[in-house]
Image (cartoon, rainbow, N blue to C red; front, side, top):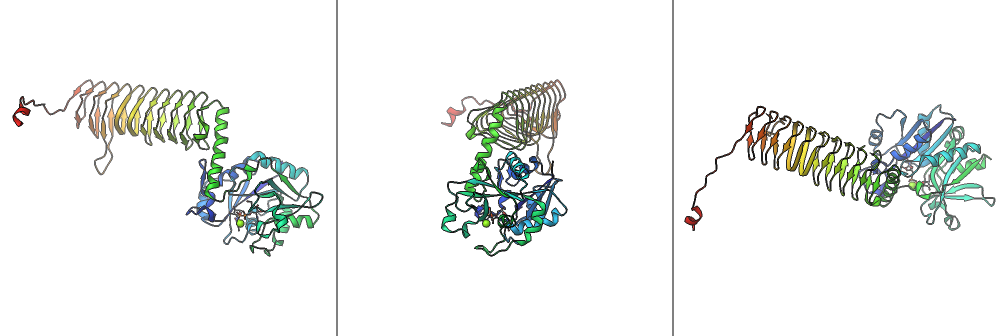
Length: 457
Ligand code: UD1
Ligand code: MG
């Protein structure tokens, strides 16, 4: 296998996004837009990837922190795509082989397409190959000008095209393969005598043709793939296509989607076979869902690990939590980060949890807040229970042993513990530790004043 390096152009601001955030960092299906073409390049066999950065350089660099194959080259001033590639040369120094050039704003590009382009390029001994597409509306793109024999002669930009050239429907995707020697010896031969006063990378095609080298244009079958995102309309469109691909993959793996068009699964989510996902769900953050789970409508899940046969009922929100098998949550429950639920736990409606461990078979079925707590197995938490974990300065822990029954409307003022097999009576405010096998009861004795209402009248 011949060696492959990639240059990804990402120095521009992306003015049409009208955003404080640089275009290539806008997320598409759970990844910054630029991470998609970078992943495609990796999967196509590229082991060195040079990002040409300028605007918000440190933010773009930060998105790839820790990635050993990523290097960055600065382009201080954006003088055009040709100039951008020239800025990458120093970082590429010494690399010999094929160089792939991509743009950071093409999230739909797939590795398979790059692989077939590379094969085409290498099999034909080309100096340069450009990926093209036929567009019904080619406005704005560079056009591929071919000679009478159908051979590529050059690319002309929209702003430089004459009326006849503007009629051409074959457009430049901005994706190229080049032989490194060809690139190194010709990139500095590009001028900026054009409508935009920019150094156009596309001029390399005419240079190759002029020198009698092999210069090829490969039309792609799927014009969607090379779509460059320039504004938020295109960002939404790209997100829709990515989600379609992601959902399709899950469905082929045995996951049922009631309505894939309204189900939002980010990149990097794993779902087991025979699980069913209802409409309106949003699942991301590397969540792993087991087999045979039911995720009802409008559930949001991020960064969770969910075992087999769990049932997450409508409109629940689960963040950075861990669920065993056969756990039921919701409807309308909120599992906040650090919630760990063992097998067969039941969390009912309007229950909020945070940093808790709950043992097997325990239940909190209604209207409860459980925070900073360690709860044993087979515990019943009654309706309206509150762990009072915060004294205004510090957080404190509540510990509840196995087989405890907490009645309704109980406050546990932490730090406090309830020993195993105890019962806390309804309405109790627990402020001192309860020993095992006990009854804890703190109620103001009730007074009945007979005839009181009659006297009032
Ligand atoms: C470019 C191509 C055009 C093609 C289109 C495909 C040129 C001259 N034109 O036009 O033929 O049809 O892409 O989308 O190449 N960039 C830098 N530094 C610069 C300029 C651009 O890093 O100085 C980056 C941008 O951030 C962007 C990419 O290069 O990621 C493309 O630049 P852009 O200005 O969008 O090029 P187009 O005008 O769309
Ligand atoms: Mg431009």
